Image 1 (cartoon, rainbow, N blue to C red):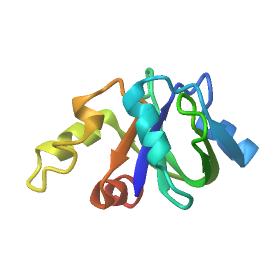
Image 2 (spheres, helix red, strand yellow):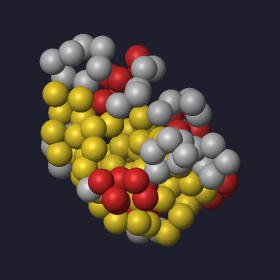
Image 3 (cartoon, rainbow, N blue to C red):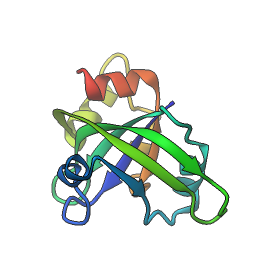
Length: 130
C-alpha cells in the first residue's frame, strides 16, 4: 500500500525527517486518518506532503513499524526516503482532469483536510516518478 502524509512544514517538515532519519508520525486525530494509520504495514510506501502555503508533495518515506495497541493513537514509525520533484496541489488537480483521471476519486481531493490519505499505485508512481 501507499499513503500520503500531510504536515505543516513549520511544525515538522520533510527536512526535519531527513535530519532525524526516523520518527513516530503523531498528532493525527481525525477518525478516518487514524483508521488509515492503523491499516499501515511495515514497508508501506509514503509520500510526505507539505500543507499550508506550500501544498506540495516533497519527499518519500516508508513505514518501519505500527503499534496499534492503543485504539485512539496508533504509533506509526516512519523512515525517511528521498526528496522528489515537487508536485503541487494544482498539479494534482490538473492530473485529475486528464484522460487517465488520476486522483479524480482520491480522498486527497475529495476530503481536503484529511491528514492521511491512501494512494493507488498509479497515484504514488505519478507523485514520485512523474
